[in-house]
Image 1: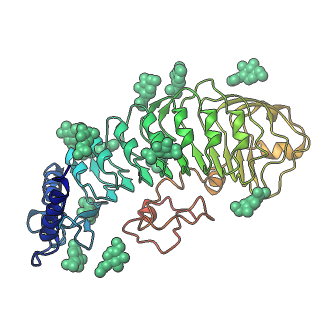
Image 2: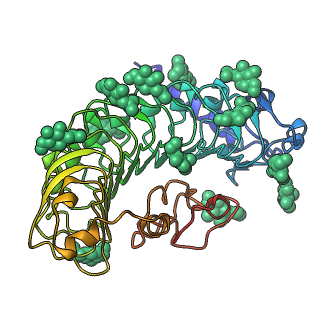
Image 3: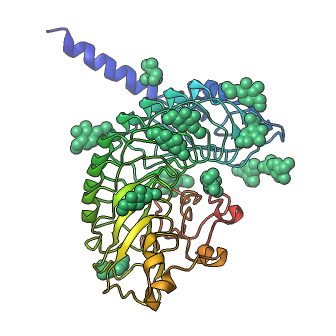
Length: 400
Ligand SMILES: *[C@@H]1O[C@H](CO)[C@@H](O)[C@H](O)[C@H]1NC(C)=O
Ligand SMILES: *[C@@H]1O[C@H](CO)[C@@H](O)[C@H](O)[C@H]1NC(C)=O
Ligand SMILES: *[C@@H]1O[C@H](CO)[C@@H](O)[C@H](O)[C@H]1NC(C)=O
Ligand SMILES: *[C@@H]1O[C@H](CO)[C@@H](O)[C@H](O)[C@H]1NC(C)=O
Ligand SMILES: *[C@@H]1O[C@H](CO)[C@@H](O)[C@H](O)[C@H]1NC(C)=O
Ligand SMILES: *[C@@H]1O[C@H](CO)[C@@H](O)[C@H](O)[C@H]1NC(C)=O
Ligand SMILES: *[C@@H]1O[C@H](CO)[C@@H](O)[C@H](O)[C@H]1NC(C)=O
Ligand SMILES: *[C@@H]1O[C@H](CO)[C@@H](O)[C@H](O)[C@H]1NC(C)=O
Ligand SMILES: *[C@@H]1O[C@H](CO)[C@@H](O)[C@H](O)[C@H]1NC(C)=O
Ligand SMILES: *[C@@H]1O[C@H](CO)[C@@H](O)[C@H](O)[C@H]1NC(C)=O
Ligand SMILES: *[C@@H]1O[C@H](CO)[C@@H](O)[C@H](O)[C@H]1NC(C)=O
Ligand SMILES: *[C@@H]1O[C@H](CO)[C@@H](O)[C@H](O)[C@H]1NC(C)=O
């Protein structure tokens, strides 16, 4: 091994000369990333010319629209791209595999355009990625399992597209992901029970998809789950897992129109449950007689097959309970029960409904910010929002 040492010191010297001792050079973007941007641009359709300034100059130093770079040169001598913020730019066309070449990227944001085609699996190469925001486009195809390789991903937001296929089991590796926003797609099949080991998961929004099979009982082990929203799926014949009575963190459980059968489990030990929607299923048996959380505001059991109700059910006055279209209503004689059996008016539904409230919240302005944990159904960030990023107000779904 005698030759190793001299060789190493020569190499170190070469690196020193190359990186530190050279006269100052103009700051430029990594050419590999510049090529990637050119490829990305060439497969986008940009009718409003929002990206016209991508035609010349350097992305980081000539202020290309939507391209945000690290403000210092990295050790390789180049500037790297930190964020691609192309929200609401009237873009159509496709996403190209070269997106995966933006290897220092933290935010990839194409929200609210009309991009079609599929999600490139190469995005799974961007190990720095923290926010993947593709909601509100026309994306098709399935979710690439390679996205499970993103160790720093905080949020995957692909709701309101036409994504099909199954949820990849590999997503169980997304150790840092807090938000799964995938509602309003055509995702099908069984929810993998492996996802129950996601240590950071807070919001699991897969309502309005084509899921079948059963709701994994193992989800009760998710240590941080606040919102579980699976409305309008087809878990035909399966029941709500009994283990859900143990999810101590849960604030909202929404399983409207999920083809669920069987009894309602004991949810009295879900201390913070504020919103429970089990309407439009074929649930049987009794309305839970035990006291639900002090924080409950809504319990919607409409359109089920519930036959009995506890005599002791004596909810606080400000709780909305809906029993309309259950056998229990045709047998009821007590006034306090009959009151709960009235059909809900649209106004009442709108005022009590927190369905989908959270879905359209854009991310907070940077990854350092979070939704205010004290207002779980709202889009308030802990610092003022930049409207241009959070499209909530314009979308009209901002209710709180
Ligand atoms: C970058 O361009 C935007 C408009 O695209 C403009 O508002 C901003 O002032 C420019 N910044 C610099 C440093 O040129
Ligand atoms: C460069 O970016 C870092 C964070 O990425 C920030 O803390 C710092 O203030 C920025 N410096 C300049 C000169 O903008
Ligand atoms: C997108 O298109 C709509 C309708 O033509 C227009 O009102 C809006 O200003 C456009 N926005 C951008 C950023 O191009
Ligand atoms: C995207 O949409 C355009 C028309 O809007 C269509 O011609 C093209 O085939 C679509 N591409 C994919 C990959 O779906
Ligand atoms: C990027 O991802 C593709 C497909 O996922 C893979 O084949 C390729 O090796 C990756 N490239 C790098 C540089 O990691
Ligand atoms: C995107 O989908 C909407 C309806 O889902 C359709 O009206 C629109 O033409 C599509 N746009 C493109 C570019 O495919
Ligand atoms: C996620 O955490 C598990 C358990 O701590 C670990 O085995 C796994 O390697 C981690 N995955 C990643 C991608 O870091
Ligand atoms: C999701 O789909 C449902 C059913 O089609 C629809 O009622 C709802 O408005 C959609 N939500 C969003 C946010 O698009
Ligand atoms: C839902 O899945 C069924 C098969 O389970 C399929 O026949 C149907 O076309 C799917 N619907 C949508 C909207 O994807
Ligand atoms: C739900 O799935 C069952 C088969 O498992 C099927 O018979 C039924 O039509 C589906 N319902 C809907 C609304 O897709
Ligand atoms: C109601 O919610 C508040 C705030 O989340 C919490 O501190 C309190 O413990 C909850 N009530 C019960 C009975 O758990
Ligand atoms: C309701 O439950 C009864 C038994 O309690 C059963 O005979 C009936 O078929 C159920 N109806 C529906 C629509 O599930």
